[in-house]
Length: 81
Image 1 (cartoon, helix red, strand yellow):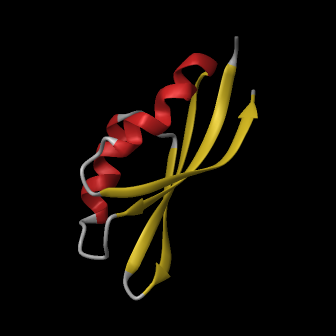
Image 2 (spheres, helix red, strand yellow):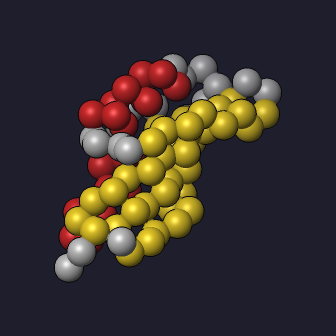
């Protein structure tokens, strides 16, 4: 097993959710990069990059979805390093 780079798009439950609070909790999970992306009508999404061991990557989506205020998560890319 090796390392993988996984990119997620994290959407908040609504535009009223504090995106900076979600961002802080994602940073605590060990994200390598986090970018804020404007969607529409004040709604923002986070593009998040993790570099983790292959086994750990399988559970990363579950960890993200357990964060309060997160509405949905989409896996955008997975690359073996």
